[in-house]
Structures are given as C-alpha cells and as structure tokens.
Length: 142
View 1 (cartoon, rainbow, N blue to C red):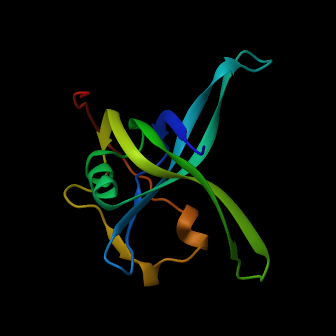
View 2 (cartoon, rainbow, N blue to C red):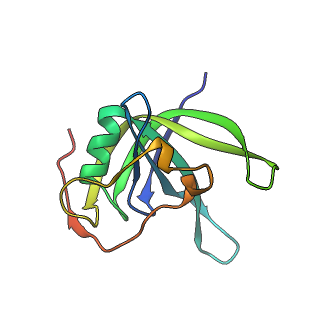
View 3 (cartoon, rainbow, N blue to C red):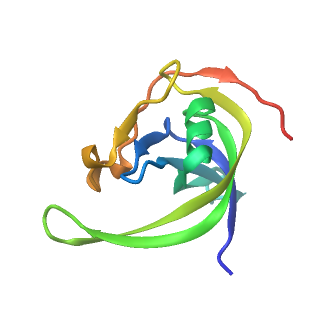
C-alpha cells in the first residue's frame, strides 16, 4: 500500500505548467510540522515536494498561494534525471491525488496563474518556485 496524507503550509505559490498532452500540472513545497519538539524546544518542519495534475492543479493554483494551509493525499513516488553536469539526481515526491483547502491565501498574481509549457521548463527549475505577497482568504470545509 502506498498512501500518504499531509497537512501543511505552501512555502511558495504553485509552479503551474501545461504538459505536452494538454494537462495542467502544479508543483509546490509543503511545510509539514512534526508532532514533537526538538532538544531546543522548537517544532521542526519537513519540506515535502508535491505535484498535482488536471482540475486539481488548476483549482489549487487559482485559490492557494504561499502560506495557504492545505491537506494533500496521494502516493509517494521516486524518479531520477540527469543533471547538466551529467550526474544522476534522485527525487522523492508526493503525487497528490486530492487537495483540501483549509486556510487559503490567494496567489500573488490576480486572475489566472502563469502557465509554462513543458518545453520552457527544465529539471533544474522544477524546484524553483516564485514567491511574492498574498492576500488572506478562507474557504469553507466541506
């Protein structure tokens, strides 16, 4: 069984792309607090890379931005790619299947999110996400 459920805050606005087959993809990092304190009495966080697709990606990019508290369920996925210096990089991420908006902050750009085509993105910029100011908005939980 490969299933993960996380609740955390988005560290930056989602990075949205249009994949070659016409599907939308959104990627973001989710800061998830640990359930215990460290030796200094602080609560540490893990930073989990999440990718979502289709309508879920579109709605998340439209309603959520840096600081949004969201719940994500999906599966853990690993992949590898070759860097420019010809070394192999390994990535572990969550392939999100369901996203719940708990406390949202609109993305910094009003209206539609900026969408990049697959050809315009590289493996290196897959982890570079834009950051800017946000307005706070809350949505009801269903």
